[in-house]
Image (cartoon, rainbow, N blue to C red; front, side, top):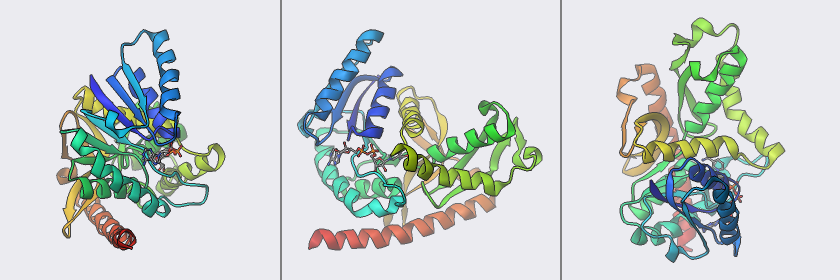
Amino acid sequence: MLKVAFIGVGKIGQTIAYSVIFDGLAKEAILYDIIPELPEKFEHELRHAIATRGLDTEVIGTNSLDDVNNADVILIMAGKPRKPGMSRRDLFVDNAKIQIDLAQKLPPRNPGAIYIMVANPVDMMASVFMRFSKQFTISTGDQVETMRLRSFIAKKLKVPVNKVSGYVAGEHGEDAVVLWSTVKVNGKPFDEVAKGLSKEEVENYVKSIPGEIIRVMGGTTWGPATIIKDIVRAIALNEGRVMSIATPRTYQGEIVHISVPTVVGAEIGPSLEPVLPQADKERLNKAVEDFYKVYKENLDHLLQTIKQ
Ligand SMILES: NC(=O)c1ccc[n+]([C@@H]2O[C@H](COP(=O)([O-])OP(=O)(O)OC[C@H]3O[C@@H](n4cnc5c(N)ncnc54)[C@H](O)[C@@H]3O)[C@@H](O)[C@H]2O)c1
């Protein structure tokens, strides 16, 4: 069991913390936020829930980063969420400033920790955090899209969701790419079983459903939180589960994060990129190129803003 720190315990942070603790994955959970009293009161809530299950997880809610020390895994949810109609990329500057601050303060207190970025735009925030902290950082990336894809196909084709496999890769958000070569239902390629369900309909769902949930529910929580908990689970239990998370790579001298199906356990990797068909590899290369272009523009603007 791990010592897990949750940086930012708003809507998604609370749900992830709850899921991680109640899956029995944390021996210690540190809840940190800048809102006075929020982590402390959330600690009480969790302690009450833990009492009824008789778990022995130790929970600390704090407004001090000094209490966030010696963690094995650090999840970062600190940042503004999207409002209806906003793109994740609109959050770049505000949330990047938070990541730069955390990148300076967290590593000295947490040697050897794995960082999991959740705040949006998540892949770019992972790249910013890693650039400024020099610490190994992953982004939750397209594992969320991957589960949205499987759930939609299962519902439309009326099959149990565990009979649907396949991955979404690229950037988390508007530019995510479905790796159709990996999509199978009962082990058969999608095209053989689609029964009139078009690829376009599936792709539209994957890209549009989070915005629809945000419009009505104010944010996405239960889906991503459970999926992100499963990333922690794969690390904690050394599961070696293939998940479409974004890991760092260097492109034109910059660290960039792009999702690819990757083996997740106590070690992260290898990725399945080398064994993907050429067409999928080309789409991924294009995603890296597009990501870099937008990221670099935002990063340069950010670096200018910080200087002023
Ligand atoms: N990766 C994903 O799949 C995914 C899914 C859902 C939400 N998100 C993202 O996660 C982020 C949080 O979303 P939310 O709905 O929980 O928002 P929220 O506003 O409910 O919570 C954000 C929390 O971060 C805290 N915070 C801000 N600055 C901080 C700092 N410097 N240190 C510590 N805490 C700080 C805030 O006080 C707040 O409690 C957003 O950027 C959102 O877009 C990502």
